[in-house]
Image 1 (cartoon, rainbow, N blue to C red):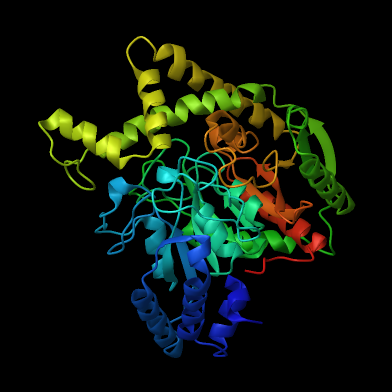
Image 2: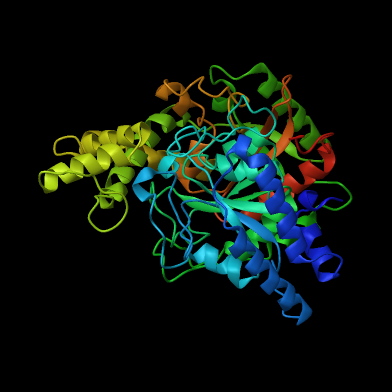
Length: 490
């Protein structure tokens, strides 16, 4: 097995068995990034010297028998997770010169468990987008076909894992930004329950929606990473004080190739959505049949308020964004407009030149919806709809263990195809937004390919803090389907 093919689990085995060194593994992946990433654009920042220094330290720890869960394993981070001493841009010019003085909680946990941080991945600016075309730095391409998008906003992380530039990566999911790019790139993407993972050190887009999660080569690695990054954090008031199980025990329940005893619900509203690509529908039906053969009982359920999800989300998320992004004013840090007449002029020049068009669009929408006379009509009403959506899921999980659906209505689209059509772009998240609105976990698992060779995933969603159900079902499905080709030829 080549270095680039290693998962977290297989890399751990070789590292702890002294069959390879972290320095060798990290150096091989850095060489691969240097060779291929110019055309792919998965990374914004790669600090080769720092990564190799961390790898040497990991090798010494292994020699001294000071071994942690990720010792010596190279991991990539989405570039809105604060990393001490490493530039954190959020894909925006406004933070082009921002170097945090601290690590976010998840970054501290990775480092505390011996991980090697191999680089910071490209993303839609401030996580606003579904294609990674909204980055201020570059467009990330899909490793399976460079004419197509990788999805977004965690497109850089998903592309980096699919291109085998790292063993795994972290992304963030505000409305599908882990699951959708994972589906488009043919890897596993897990959005944990809101509150399962600390958001301290995450540059916020939508504070009630954002969640950090793993993007990995297989379901087992997703569980391994989730074990490490989960847990209550006193630095984050949205972090939940709930126990963290060993998520790898979910696999113990998959015995003799069976998922007998599990029930999957298929929302009738999802399958009547206009515009589902026939190839996505075909892959979904095949996935449903595989799960049924594994002993899963499949039944139709209803999520009555599905038709309002997109509209409610695109009120709540921009409102929260307009509040969160107000801090980027050119006064304390980041980009500042030049040749300003006064303070107001500086604000105008800083924000108009520092933010890209999609970020400006969402700030304008959010500010309008929060303004005097409109708050109750827009944000207030959207919040009420959100409560109804949460109740829909609560009722649905009384009848099933997990909900099965497509991840996106269609496979990855061509670069530039939808960039000037915001409404079409927003509707690509129609199946993923609900999980963020309800605060529940969701996972995307590779399920097949389109006729053009582009990956298509399936989505599973479970009740709050029941990631075990997702991992059990996802692992069983993954082990059964055994896709012929797991990674692209670059």
